[in-house]
Amino acid sequence: MRSSNLASSQGAADRLGIEMAAETIGEVIAASDIVHICTPNGQHVVQALEALNAGCHVICEKPLATSVEEARMVAGMVDAAGLIGAVPFVYRYHPMVRRARRIVADGQVGDVLTIDGSYLQDWLSNESDTNWRADLALGGSSRAFADIGSHLCDLLEFVTGSRIRAVVARTRTVFPTRNGERVQNEDVVAVLAEMGDGALATLLVSQLAPGRKNGLVLELHGTRRSMRFEQENPEQLWLGAADGSQLLMRDPQAAGDRGLSLLPPGHPMGYQDAFNAFVADVYAATRGESPDGMPTFADGARAAVLTEAVLASAQSGAWVEVANA
Image 1 (cartoon, rainbow, N blue to C red):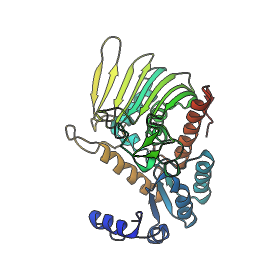
Image 2 (tube, rainbow, N blue to C red; image 1 turned 180 degrees about the vertical axis):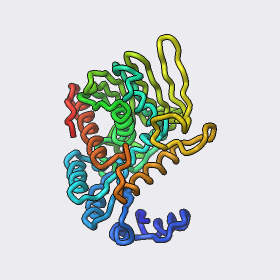
Image 3 (cartoon, one colour; image 1 turned 45 degrees about the horizontal axis):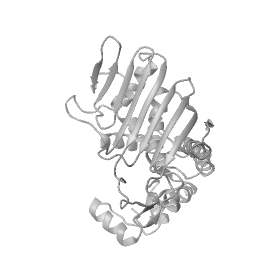
Image 4 (tube, rainbow, N blue to C red; image 1 turned 45 degrees about the vertical axis):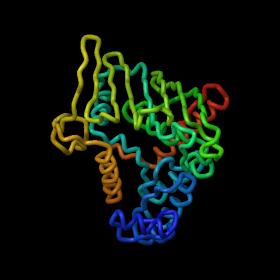
């Protein structure tokens, strides 16, 4: 484990029962063939490249990079080296998300017409609230969208099987300073998106929504049914129809969750289970397996492309086409 300094690393290692504390990324690389990068955003690319050059597989927190060019470069290097690179878009691993994906793929929703999505948090609601993510050098040019909007868009594209084709966006930085330090990235983002299949999506992202802790919600409206998933209630999935609605509960006997539903009904599963399943998939991939739905560096590069398009639209006020990669 490496932290901001050796003393911090050792303290964290002691608390977590980790065998080794390191002072440099090189020491971490020398000790393992799989490196987890959980540092501030601005350090991701340099550290990922160092690990990849040493022949290590990499799990890199999102954003994979703070620019499209660097994200594509790192993703391309993973492919060229034959290594595994993964980004923890872990909401894919809720069993009911996999069930939602199957319901859409089976045509039960019909053609998706509209999408309503949001990711709302409140941990930066006050001017005195601050974090390294609000620092342009450490966090990058986007905060709210790159940090949590990327999760929303990944979930949207994963469940629907359709990609965002174009966006028009508005951003707002509510507090120009936080705790006396200048803020140059956004607190709030609103996006109107056109999907590749013609569906229209409205997306709201905020880190200033009092009372909302991790309110990630995705609702689809199709020609046959509507469907709603709420990350804070991950054991259930709402299906709506003109002649009646139903609430589906997680059930290991139900098809579509790819064996992720490990506990009997009534024994709640949640975020940590999703994260554990993601890590297990990555380690399985390093052994030559091909886990379905595992988010890769290509998905991290996709998030960078979407972030760039949203920021460009917010600056120009115009629709921006989203590149495929």
